[in-house]
Length: 174
Figure 1: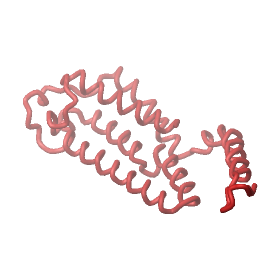
Figure 2: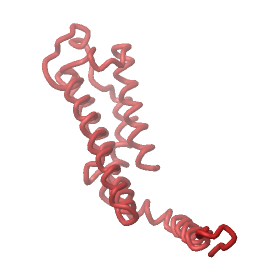
Figure 3: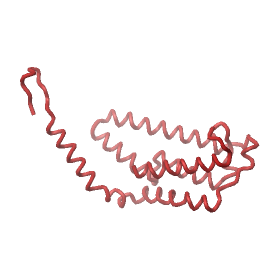
Figure 4: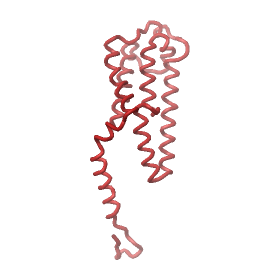
């Protein structure tokens, strides 16, 4: 949840900055933005890679732990979830290519200004946290260790106390 909050919050902030400059969120309205806004494009790429789970960034830790846990319970679900991760990465990279790369083909995009100092100060902490959580996740994971253990104990209690009905409806096994 922490990873998602950092990545998604940063993506909304970055999209908002571009919206303020162009007053549109349509992917087709952009192209070649990196030529006019190289710092913005670099920051957006780091956060996009964080969102898709690149190793070394915060999104990887969460996705890896979720898929590892899912695989230990049911490999079919893990394969299904992995395909969702792959499709999300494909979409994010496709969007980045269409918005940032290529030639500047719209006149409105030729006058875009790169990030201001204030905007850099707003986004840079989120990028630092995304890197920190990806490189040294132990400090964040350790804080929730007790609550995760308690949740796992409760799940195990429920599993062990399930009531199973056998063929004879009058006979119940615990």
